[in-house]
Image 1 (tube, rainbow, N blue to C red):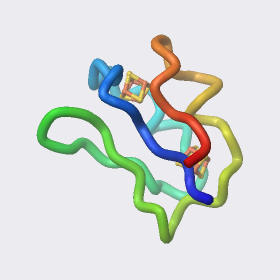
Image 2 (image 1 turned 120 degrees about the horizontal axis):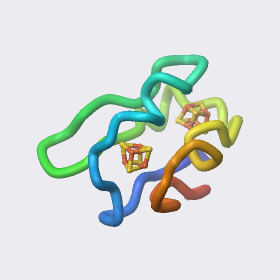
Image 3 (image 1 turned 135 degrees about the horizontal axis):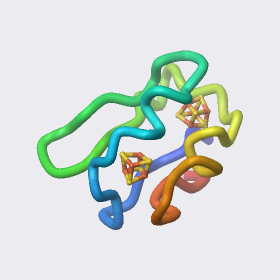
Image 4 (image 1 turned 30 degrees about the horizontal axis):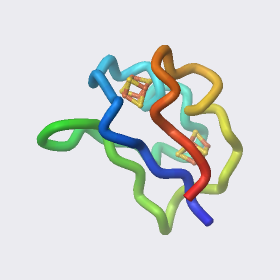
Length: 56
Ligand code: SF4
Ligand code: SF4
């Protein structure tokens, strides 16, 4: 399962820069992960200040 970003996201952008496969992009109200691209490495969850990304 790909990681998903919850509504806790404050759109800081930190995770997008750390994703090795560039699966994360800025959405309308929060950052979003492309499920088909995510390789489930967990880097986004490690860097997020609010714990928004989690395994889907
Ligand atoms: Fe990118 Fe890894 Fe987060 Fe998936 S788990 S979105 S590959 S940083
Ligand atoms: Fe949102 Fe966390 Fe990514 Fe920042 S690091 S954009 S708060 S999911």
